Length: 313
View 1 (cartoon, helix red, strand yellow):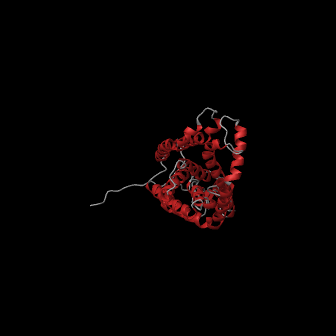
View 2 (cartoon, one colour; view 1 turned 60 degrees about the vertical axis):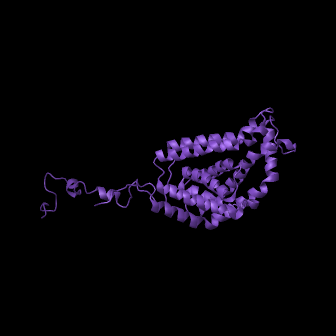
View 3 (cartoon, one colour; view 1 turned 135 degrees about the vertical axis):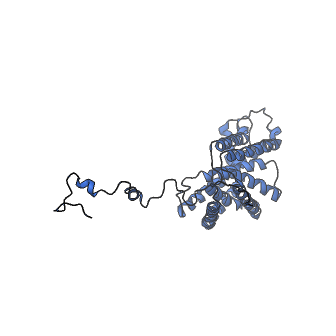
């Protein structure tokens, strides 16, 4: 039934704007039509270990201990008895394990680690440990690097650090590479995966740009890993009295210059092939590996709460 006047005008007392406006409450769907809720997660955003406040503090503590463990010889005096500290690796290993456990406990308290995350950690650590013997470090052929970088990228910095350390520990048990260098390798690989998890655009950058970013990071991380590991063993060569030997108590700049020459003379032949292999594998296998990791993360629904129900009857 129409209520318009004789000439189609609105009745007295009712303005045209009021008469033409839609009923109150019906205009909301039109203003939000086609827009997803702000909190709706996108594919691949879920991470098994979120870097919360406690886990970030634990990672900072582990990193500080690692920096001291690697770099203290550069600040040691001439009478520091550096050679006596060559056997300190077991003590660092004994300190590193509780700190790694502290990272895990911190992530549990942050609500980011559950049984599904532990299962993913075990699978990826086993895969990394299985890849390492394929090259066993010969001429820098270490295919586990690209998997560690891609896993850290998809699964986040907290998961990445624990994965890198655990993978290196498992591979050492598998290859018989247990020695005073192991705790330093665990720290260095943990940092490699941690850095991959901190790369920009984890939810938005995809395709070739992401692959080139991961390849470039993998190349840089390969060189940095070798450099840091050189720093672990180089100070104990002080008795050789060569042009690249460490001189206790010498100026930091002079020792760093000798260290750079030492790296060029000894490890460049390993670091360069490792970087090239990491880039090649990241570009060739990266799309498939990233897709598989993101699909597994999405289907596992790591961020969904796990509930247990009593059986009926």
